[in-house]
Amino acid sequence: MRHIIILFICLSFLSCEKERAVREHFYELRERVKVSDIVKDYSIVKLETTEDNLIVDPTVVKFSKDRIFILDMFSPSKSLYVFELTGKYVGKVGNKGDGPGEYIMPFHFLLDETANRIYLQDVATNSMLVYALDTFEFIEKYAIPFYANCFELLDEEHFVWYIGAGMRNEGEFQKHIQITDKRCIPQKSMIERMDFPTRGMYNVASYFVRMDDSVIFHHPFMGDYYNISLVDDILQKAFSLRFENLSFPDAEFLMEHKDNIVEDLEKGSYIQWCDVTDVLSTHLCYFGCGQDTYIGKYDEKTGKGWYVNRDNLIDDLGIGVLARPKLGYSATFVSFISLESAGQNITADNSILKDVVSEDDLGGNPILLFYK
Image (cartoon, rainbow, N blue to C red; front, side, top):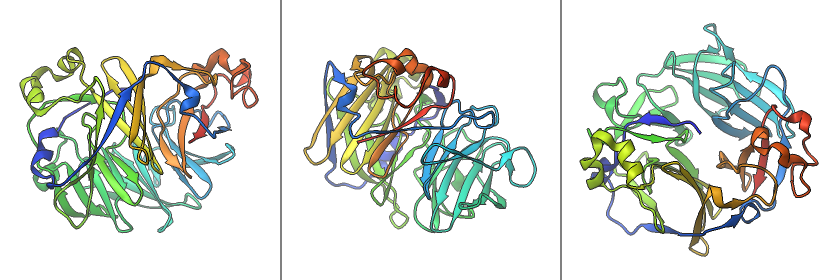
């Protein structure tokens, strides 16, 4: 997994949160868990591999109109690839370059089915490229007036953006949350920038997650998740994560250790990054503490949750490493299985991959795993 240096804004939330009761999702520690306890009612899709679409690391993944859109910042062509749900390769949206409809460093994208649009953020030129969702035809390009980490569709008319500290922004654009219309014209700014702590590490692509009809904001170092509202200037805490025997750093620790925060977090065994994917009433939580990665599962209906060190996952399905889900789709979680990590497991008797892939597929595109 890649790790990206960022600035952390924990204490600023303390001044903008509404006073109200907050749901707490508590996860108990388990020593051992089978992969089959997580991956149930599954289906598998093999993505077609060509010389034009070799995927190194799926950065952002979206689904629309029976198609799969995969942005890979680390592939040779750094492109937005499109596949059918069967895995058949359709083509690319735009191309790498500096001509009309071309991009240099695609960083994030959204699919807007209502407007039949694809919005793609090119951080190299700090611009938005717009394409038709059904035909991939290039429509227009316009400037983004600030530098941002990621964005999400807040409603039919607005984007919400996260701006990390240290980005070259001025005035209201220095605030961490920006709300704009679809042409990136500013509408509202939220969360004052704070000078502490200085930095941290995470490995999630976005600060936003969609749950039901809401856009939820979270910082990967924090266990608190907040509703974003266009109307309300105050963030409302949606829920908080708590883990048996592990904890997130508190504000006092961050202030005292801000000059050496990464190393001191590891020494103190604090959670350093966290990401949650929601499907119906079930949450899958991936988080890291030092060099260890953990997987957790929480059921809102029962109010019960558990987590386990990923090294203690028993691979009874023969899939290799169970990667964190990229998103929820059609009431299922969606993870990618690297054929390199699966290795010789693909021919094992217990492998759910043996009837789908062969040794000739090793080195090709990853496998899509849909599960509940």
